[in-house]
Length: 113
Length: 111
Image (cartoon, rainbow over all chains, first blue to last red):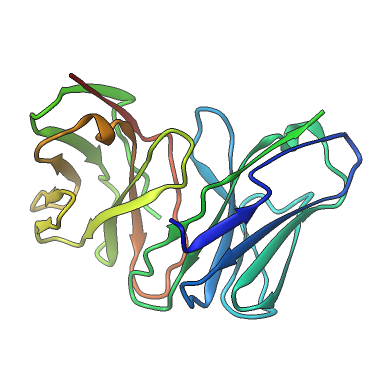
């Protein structure tokens, strides 16, 4: 969905490096999410935010941190990247409606060597 | 959230209806059935959701059994662009943020 953008789209890095993935949205949604996807598996929730400066852990938050300084932006950081963090990362947004359908970005493919 | 069970894969002929089953025998009364799909490494896309009544939109129809223990997503006229992984997800509605993605069903539409 063009309303949710992620940068970079691809990144190769080395073990121990700090990496930041950025997500921006123009949908005006309050809620934002970070997921990771490993080959052949479904998505798993890393962190989510319901408002600016609201941060909540998901299923697999260890090794990750996030920042939500503005409604439209939600960044994911890997403080010291390790090879098993190699994955496809998706950002998503939703509004506060009852069924809060989630809109996903195009994904960031991260490889940690 | 209730667990869902879907077939690993299925094929469908282009132009024919694709019927995707999902079992959710432990679904509770306040939980909805949602369907998303993911086209080759793109971000997942919402398709449809329902509680107990059958639902239809421009993309698909959702048929939920009377006991709500299973459902079927119907793509009425499958095209090659419908080739994707389809996820059946059960979750509560209001204020429930969480989407729990399983492995889904890989649907291949063949010409």
